[in-house]
Image (tube, rainbow, N blue to C red; front, side, top):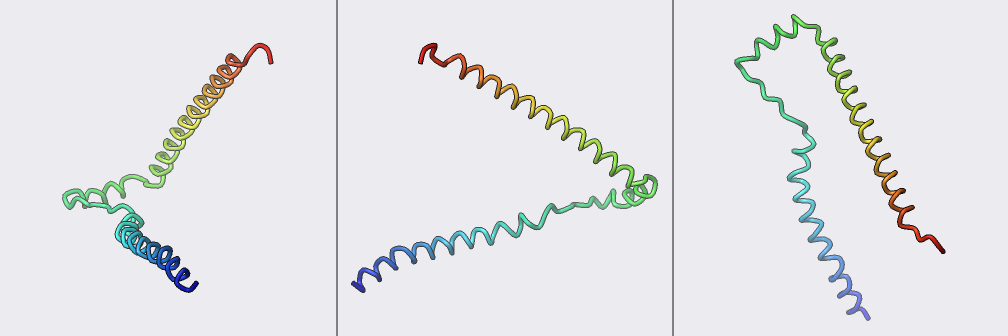
Length: 104
């Protein structure tokens, strides 16, 4: 009876352990790089211009304008998605009612 327990342990635990180590190694290689975010590259030729541009323009207003433009774009996309979903639902209802038999 103890031989049966050892073999079931070896058949279940060892492959799981090996698979877990492989998945952990792969995740450890890729996840930290993905979680670190985007890397900003600064062109040295334009680095001085950025300071002057920032001083000349009020960055807060630019950010607000960009955010409002992005919000309007998202609203348009959301409305399009809702319209598409309504059209699809109406088509499915029409298809279902047209394929129903006339008599039970």
